[in-house]
Image 1: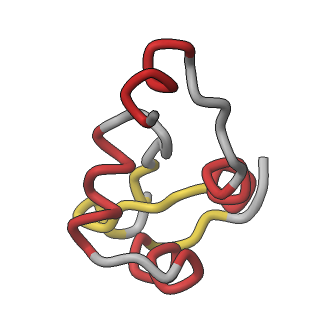
Image 2: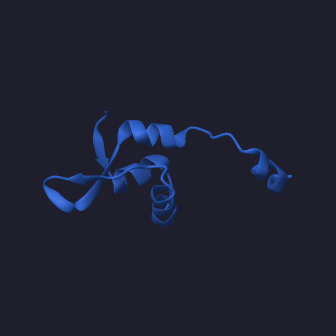
Length: 67
C-alpha cells in the first residue's frame, strides 16, 4: 500500500472537479480510507490513484454504443 493523500490532493493530481471525483469514488474506481486523526476527512491511496488513471478496455456492448 502506498501513502494516503486527501481527496483534495487526489483531485488536483488528476485535474478533475469535485463532481467527477465523487463519480469516480461512487463507481468503485477509487476506495476511500478514514483519517484516524480526523474522521471527517477521507483519504485515498496513491497506488489506487495511479490505477484509476490507467486506461480501461471498452467492453463489446460499449463499443456498439460508441460507434
